[in-house]
Length: 224
Image (cartoon, rainbow, N blue to C red; front, side, top):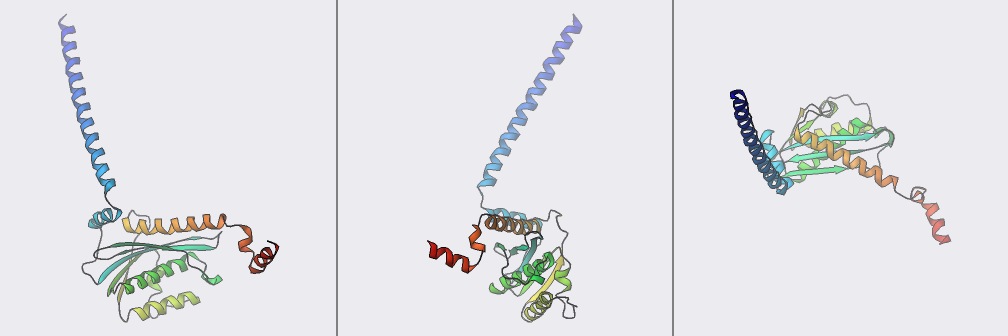
């Protein structure tokens, strides 16, 4: 009889403890949901500023940091650029599909070079005097040297482009590990991949006659 009472008392104690724990969990879940709602309500720019507290960021109005990346499809024979430019007051996202490239320029590394060059152009437009380019491809920094040995016309162009802009802008390079969860580096990668996928979809859904040249379109116009 005593054992049954003790067991009943113990069970009540455990139930009470479990109920208390469940209530606490519910309270925590409710708080998290509220925080998530507030979090989602904030603008993307605000969230990027928040993440910037964990990474390097420009110290004055004439400095900037550019994260650059590229995506390339050997099968489709085109690529894309992804750039995140951090100024003291803004986080600027940019992506592009370079057009009219020579056959020798159609490589992944060359698109990385184009991304770095575009970042320099973006910094110049904003009167930036000190630019740090963060990249995960060694060629971006190696080919930026005045005495770099180049193997193609685009590499030679890139080297001369950086050397020329270094006369008026302090440009330095910093290697970051790719896909290592560095926020803005990941963002540059996402921008490049999204642009590549969007261009692939665009080309896939383009009617055939648009790619068959002007003569075909002229003939089609006459028929119509």
